Image 1 (tube, rainbow, N blue to C red):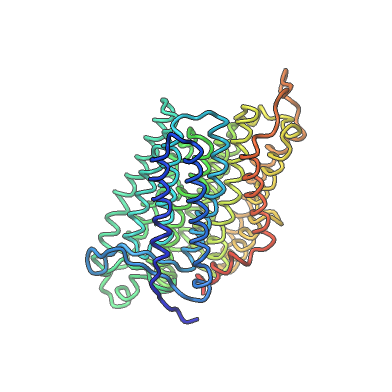
Image 2 (tube, rainbow, N blue to C red):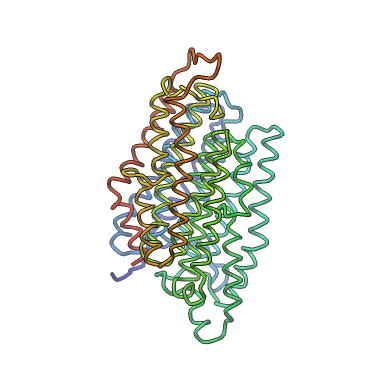
Length: 498
């Protein structure tokens, strides 16, 4: 398919919508109905704008919009291609769902500083959309840092000791790794190649010509690759993962934002975008970067799953699950096989909808029953059947069971590991699936078949408000539909792999 590049102002508009929404929220902060109406309308408009780009991208076109040029080969430019559409669709659609859920949660919990919360939430989406539509490594770095700064107040929302401590750890980890690893790597890449622009296909990276001519040494490229992997610390790879469980002190809508929409998805999107469009599959294969990366993140998959087994607090268990699940995305791309890359990229979508469902359920349980620990939830499923049914279905996606979306991920990753002739990776995936069952199944079993805690009657407890329950069911339903009808999102994934 011939690739045609056309200029489109839609990209700039998509970036401006959450920014304008932020301003509107701040101006109308004293009127909560208008404030939340602005957030809701902004999220819907953004989703429609992103959706309007689908026909052109599926037709083989790349949409671009140059904002300004700093130096030759160093610009702030937006671009919509197949890979960027994967993340943009996830971020915009989940923002729409999360806005309505947050409305119910924040009011039911009587949270303070709701204007600041809504404004920072919109700014985080602004950063995420900027990352999704970045045309080069420099633009992506700018928006990556914007996401870090804008989500700090969300993590520290409670403004207590735990909140400030979690937020401090969050910002230190993310900004330090970006400054120590990522920024020096960007500068050196620009010096060596003269550009930071992403190519139009994933086979040839920015270093291809320099390596073939001998102008760039192999060890330099390997070093830059390692710096980029660790520099995007939002990807949750061990040992730079400690910020993520610490951020669980934030309100549940923030946890959902961190784990499903903006922060961690920004991390893995930036990581995989860099692997495929900066280094490229040919360079990664030539320098044997792929399989060692797959085994390295395989350790994170298993270790985080084992830690999840040990956590009694539901949000903490989900946090370690996220650390594990994120590495599936990187592992799949690192296999450098068509099925592996497809499994990794589609998990950006599949994990997002399942994980936001799980966190929404955790928030609903907190609001309705005031329970945070799994040990306190025995028999609670009979009182909150819809919430725990949705939790169960989303758990199946995390495990990789049909017919939910996660099955599509696991199937492609298993096939990809066999295409790469890596039995070790195959065993890691099988072992991690068993661990997934080990830390998800007991939650549902205890809720529906477990005994109530001594002296607990659950009197007066019922399902969370409809403003929370409906978004939970919508996210859960989409997760199922993505498993039964995966081809819509797989169109974008297959366009990336060519």
